[in-house]
Image (cartoon, rainbow, N blue to C red; front, side, top):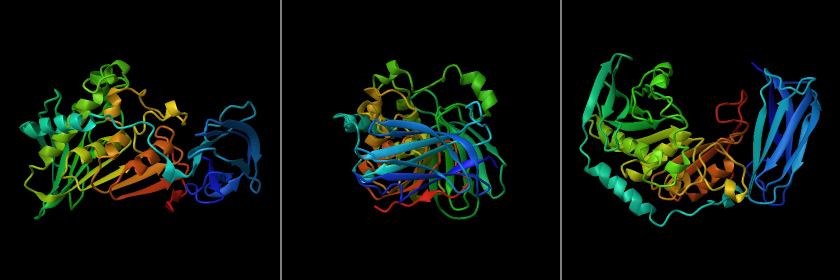
Length: 387
């Protein structure tokens, strides 16, 4: 196991109030034991615009301590990097990204929902409802005993099909549907199995569900940085996400035709871009009964323009306002669970809290300290909210 940092705050990291001092205490660790780190470069960045940084040494009994008072509702981000004698990053020492939040239940959306948002999405819902479900490709496999497993492509009105893998328990009975979506990139749909559920996993692009080294030569140039084209994103009719969401809704429409469905329960599941897709599907297919999401992406796109810490996502644009995950969340009717990573500055915690605070349906959220978008800390860092 690589060396890493362990961060503590003097109270629950999402419980601070405006004016309270936040105290970060950071130890260097290996296999759960404190170790020495001769040089640490640290930087603290706040949603209030402040930046401070410095250097320190950490020993087994002398941690790094950083104190800060945030000036508005939001989060403060602490980054620590272990350095060698030449101030180069030590590669086998995992950096730290941790956060603490102030008045997090007061964090608001940095935009407003477009006036014609509901009209726009009503048109998409009607398009999907009136489009005849047609399977254009289906291939069964024997991936796991006890399940019917197959790849399916469903025709859509948006050009490419909805394509994914479906697994159905072979035992007698009727089952809930679990539809899941994937993060950003050229990812083929995976196989998901649950002895008590129909599982459908669909890729974002409607291409073949093949390994990346086969997909990338075919689609890498065409789909390079998809969704980031400012010209496309100027209009809600040309942004890449429009057809993606239509494919997602068609995929669920197909799953609801399966005779094994219990005609009652549907879970929409996803992380990162998949969370955006899951929430959008849950909003625009009224049969969805629960959304399960983690590190939701494309939230609160105008946050950076209001001085909050930036994430990795397309520039704020008029067309994207209709696909902002927070805008979608304002229309959510079913229960939702959200997992927020406090070290994730691809999907900054402020933007995830803007989503949570905008949802009016039953909701719950869990935080994970020191987790980044593609990194989970070696020690349990789960944080339950106290609000």
